[in-house]
Image (cartoon, rainbow, N blue to C red; front, side):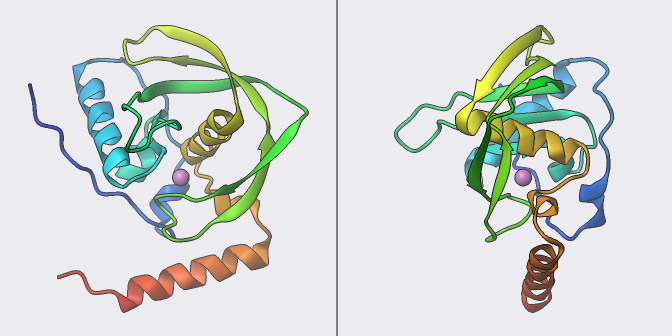
Length: 176
Ligand code: NI
């Protein structure tokens, strides 16, 4: 078996994160290898979701595992070319974070339930309704595919405060 590789996660305010990702053509061995590496990167971070654009691949794919913790076995969900075909009027609020916006969290309101159509790890079409943290997570990740970060849902003032702090942290850190 091939060894998995940890990928570098791109952080805001890198403008690459604003790229709108393009649909995946074929779900083939190369794509599955990429998704496996993305899952490993997500678990190592640790995070519960990761989109292709965050590791430098502007394709419409994401991995998530909202139940995972040290006591729960890994059960990654691979989602390719997702489309939200229904969203509930009911909204829910979670305190969101993002591997591309390290150490910042904010409450974001989104539809509480969504129905998705997507291709899975084997390239099979799936239609599925997600709720709770799954619904929030998948909407956060699909936002990434459209070049949107959770901080884009906040007021301009809050967003610019976070961007300013991120810039400062990056300026003050040394990578040796
Ligand atoms: Ni994110």
